[in-house]
Image (cartoon, rainbow, N blue to C red; front, side, top):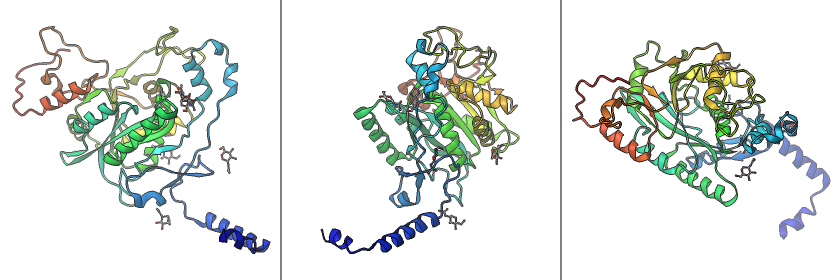
Amino acid sequence: MTRCSRMRYLSAPAFLLLGVLLMLFLYARPNNVSEPKIFNSTTQIVFLQKEEDIFSQEEPLPPKCEQNMMAAKIPGFPFFSPQIQNFLSYRHCRGFPMILDLPHKCGRHHEPEDIFLLLVIKTLPKNYERREVLRKTWAKERMHNGKWIRTIFITGTDGSGFEKKRMNKLLALEHKQYNDILQWDFNESFFNLTLKQILFLEWKNRRCRHVRFLLNGDDDVFAHTENMVEYLQGLEDNDGSKHLFVGHVIKNAFPVRTRGSKYYIPPQIHRKVAYPPYCGGGGYLLSGYTASVIYNMSKSIQIFPIDDVYMGMCLAAAKLEIEPHVGVKTLGWYIPSANLDKYNPCYMKELLLIHKFSPAEIVIMWHEVHNLKLRCGRTKQTW
Ligand SMILES: *[C@@H]1O[C@H](CO)[C@@H](O)[C@H](O)[C@H]1NC(C)=O
Ligand SMILES: *[C@@H]1O[C@H](CO)[C@@H](O)[C@H](O)[C@H]1NC(C)=O
Ligand SMILES: *[C@@H]1O[C@H](CO)[C@@H](O)[C@H](O)[C@H]1NC(C)=O
Ligand SMILES: *[C@@H]1O[C@H](CO)[C@@H](O)[C@H](O)[C@H]1NC(C)=O
Ligand SMILES: *[C@@H]1O[C@H](CO)[C@@H](O)[C@H](O)[C@H]1NC(C)=O
């Protein structure tokens, strides 16, 4: 009340002066963090690992992306599934506010941490058990052969209303405990996976420029991350500054034109007949350099809903080759005889990655491949 009554005595010139001072203050603030100038207007405060960081990390909020009404004019639009209609109406949107950020995951601005292999794992808010198991097994943050392995889960949001809030709360709790989640405020869906990938690449470009190699993968694979480090260490150029993109190479794939398929892509989304070569999205390895090239290319390539194909499109546009690795099995694996146990750890010893594993199978396999008593003998792999 006293404050109100005092206000009455402030004259108009005083208000003017206050306004000018406020503006000067706002404009004079140093603003080193605003690298990509795609954001403007108000600011958001994202959850951070330490309280001291809260005020040093205000990020500009991207403008809300509106539905593209012109999409409804695309021939055949009314006959598409809601998923495809949604995709076409929002495919231009690339800026989404962050809910959970990891500003110091890769060290501070002036002292970047030397991360050799960054595990970037696509997850959904509801996949809590998978994340817990990965943190205890192949995605555990640790040093192997003198090289740092670090982990980041990337996600959007699940559901709406209370459900969305509850899931966001869960992620915030995990984030506080483990410091390993990046979350953006967009609806998770199969057709938004490319969006998630681009948002991550933009983040990496800003916060994690010096990381040498990345594993980009799903949360339902078994990745032999120690074999990966050793494989990458054995490369001629192993500092991440040269092109590298390896995985399970898929060539001569065609868009699925069967309505009703999860992968159905109408010609209105992709006219060309064949896809460029790409690596199965279950998991592939790339260098920091290549991640940066893909990010640069993505700025001028329209979003295509299938994320691993989109990576292939960006690489083709940059005229970069992809390389097969026999140790990556993103379509599962084939064991020649029904008498053989397909979860025999001896199959795993020389592999890099296999799709698809349940949390329980991951725990068992992780234990087995580290069993020092494991004797594999002469099991030449035949698949
Ligand atoms: C912002 O930039 C100035 C000058 O370039 C520098 O002195 C300061 O430490 C930077 N602040 C942050 C938070 O990086
Ligand atoms: C913010 O960006 C949007 C779109 O990029 C633009 O329409 C708007 O005018 C900008 N606002 C300000 C205050 O610069
Ligand atoms: C996200 O999905 C929910 C339903 O799951 C829907 O209510 C909401 O409108 C969607 N948000 C956007 C921005 O499309
Ligand atoms: C992708 O996320 C945006 C933002 O939440 C949403 O509006 C859109 O419907 C989603 N796209 C699909 C295909 O689900
Ligand atoms: C990506 O683009 C930026 C800005 O144009 C440039 O500085 C950088 O060298 C590019 N990165 C690569 C790997 O080409």
